[in-house]
Length: 273
Image (cartoon, rainbow, N blue to C red):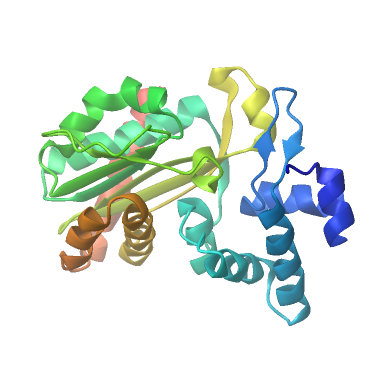
């Protein structure tokens, strides 16, 4: 049985405004959408919201309460963006239009390709059709990689030769709203994670807007990699085992990472100029 937002308010005592704020800022809870745009929730969402209320009453922050509720339900690794925000609350997101996000993403891909290192790569594309539009670039991106994985609403797991592994995501998972790139290599590390703002989904494609964080801090990139490995384990455990067995590369030198950030920024500005 599906529940309206009013039903969820009545069952949990959490106001509609609060539920909308949780969804906007933390990607929780994740409703299904009717063609009209109205939200519909599951019975399991009632239990999750009630647990968040209990955890908050015990003194946990909202982010920590949501993380604990999702972890107890086995859903704690379904969001790269939220996972990074929970573990690194100092990372400040910025609102970015799709056009600018494409430029930043391409800059990360091109700079990594230019360095030709044995990287571990992850990408989140929301929809299969978005990945197909970028598939040629990602084949090039992954050509020199040690392992490459992409997440989207694929129908099944695919492991094409000389291309990233294609892993499906749960239709109800927060990852359905996310755009992400994670690149961890011996000599450089960078990650980007963005969540599409709910109101922006009704805009024309170029005006779609994402809340984005990106970083060249090796510790942040390692965290993003760990989140992606956990997500990989759900549909491709043997691939996740290979990823887990791979030793984490030593952290690149701070000076090298500063040069990486400068190179990515220059490429982005050049694309937008």
